[in-house]
Amino acid sequence: MTTEDASHAEMPPVATAMPSASSVWRLGVGGYLLILGGVCVLAFACQSALVWLWNTWNGVPEYSHGPALPILAGFLLWQQREIFERQEFKGSVVGVLLLVTAGAALLLGTMGGAYTLQQYAFALGVAGLVLSWSGLGPLRQLALPLALLFLMIPQPDFILNNLSTRLQLVSSALGVAVIRLGGISVYLEGNVIDLGSYKLQVVDACAGLRYLFPLMTLGLLIAHFFRATFWKRALVFVASIPVTVVLNSLRIAMIGWMVERWGPAMAEGFLHDFQGWVVFMVSGILLLAFAALLNRIGPSKGRWADVFGVDLPMATPSGVGLKVRPIPGMFWLALVATVAIAVVQFTVPNRPQLVPVAPSLAAFPLELGEWQGKRDWLTPDVLQTLQLDEYFYGTYKDRQGSAVTLYVPYYATQRDRRVVHSPAACLPGNGWRIAESRTVIISGTAIAANRLLISNGEERALVYYWFDQRGRNLTSEWLVKWYLFQDSVVRRRSDGAMVRVMATLGSGESVDAVDARLQAFAALAGNALPRYLPQ
Image (cartoon, rainbow, N blue to C red; front, side, top):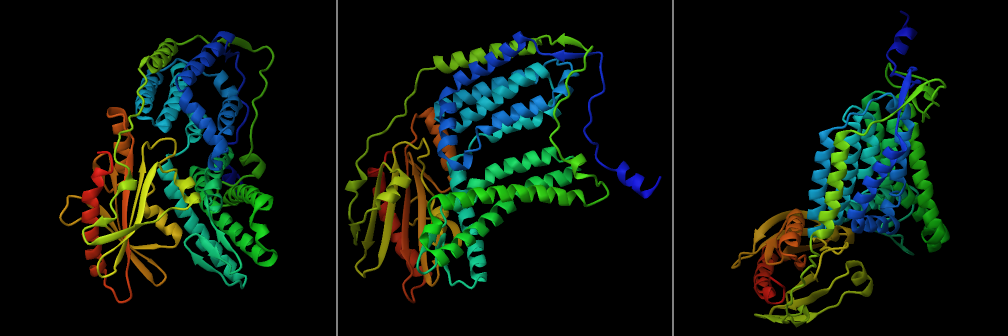
């Protein structure tokens, strides 16, 4: 065997037409109607969550690609029609078990007001219907189309917000580095790029998150159509993440250059959106180019036309017999389970959330021991972003004139994207860097708090914060979300607050001295707050 023959012998198999068969399976009209009916019943049971999903697709740019995913899933199924036609579907009890699991998740999600859990329940239910008919034999062909149904569901807000904040900081830092390469003087403070004549704020639209999820989905599809070894395909998918960050940073740098040369109009309106569209298209082209490069590495090389492409199913040859698929018994059982899910969903009494009555935070005292306070107010744009039901924000000073700030946001219900924002995620966006982070106990109390030592240039500050959630003192965001779900189900409550106490370090002032100041004030504030927050 020659070297060239050996090279071709190691190439990954190229998709070819399936061998001819004397007969193929076809789904009858009754089968189509049963599958469609099962999906419709499941969608009817999940209607509130699906309406919310549709609104998210239309209102949150990070998930604007969502409506295309069910269509892509259908296309991938149709693309593999030749394979399915030659497989006998025997059904599987696994599909029924998935439906039962989906029903339990839907019920818990409804009781807990967790739309994300209800949406996953719908996707899991559709997967259960499919597998209850097909069985596990064609699972390899069904894996990606079913995975796309799960990818269309938005991530929980606290994950989305934290990820967006981190991407903003990374994109800002890389963008500023590229701007400076052009000889432009620029200063970075958090996610704000100061060009002197104009301040460019890297908000969610520029964070890269807007492209990350769509580009990861595109990377997954490119990897699927790339007929290469597994490690090459996996690398193409993983590459979508750094490509998004780097290209978005270049976009920020380009906006900075254009603003410096032609003015602030370059960072606004149609031109800003057009630049984003161009970045996404270039990112997709780079992923294709990366796959083409990987194709030239290693012994398993092949012509690009052979290793990458979207194959369409061949027409069924004339003379081939057609057999109507029988309906597996497991699918009938799955249909019964689907109807039962819908009946239970609309039989369980509506359990509206309870909004407890408590004294208003507006009445929180401005005198705490030796501390005298003055109330401050958040700006309208900040209030619109946070969507608070109530808050207290004030500055207190002791007899020596040392100051601390107290901020307490309160939500009567933490649903519909209304959630408490953690300082650990928000402060870096304002230019603060976290130098130390640990948990402490406020002296003289049983209150646990997160302690952050932060810096911004020459300025340093200490922050104590904790979450007051329906009488619970919590320091972990994950526990906040768990108890929010648990209390929504058991206690029908989702109200909650966050307490933040902050003090800057004066010139020559030690960290220990500011720690003592915050401990003393936090003890007074922590003991007073339960009278103004529902417990």
